[in-house]
Image 1 (cartoon, rainbow, N blue to C red):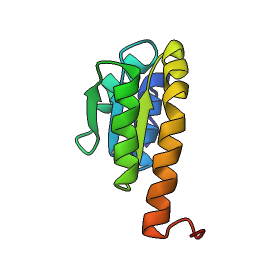
Image 2: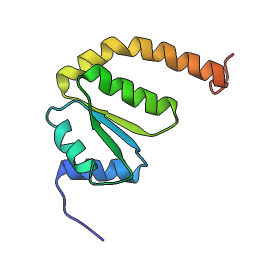
Image 3: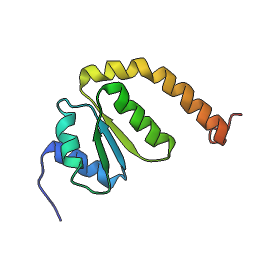
Length: 105
């Protein structure tokens, strides 16, 4: 069935159909409306984070648990996330090494 919807609702629907289980957001346009639309799907756990770093940590934890996730933030939040991403990369590499998922031991 075809349905006409706004862009934010379409993004939320796409996340749902892609199997996203966790959305962690720091409020700010346009992420606010996407998270508000996604919360309508009971299969998606949505939460507001106190800052961008915490939102990324929640999403990263979900990724380590093997869950599809989305971290939403405004433009300035991306800069905060980039500062934190180096430590994520190190943890991700360590996790892949420990589980053998990376192939390079």
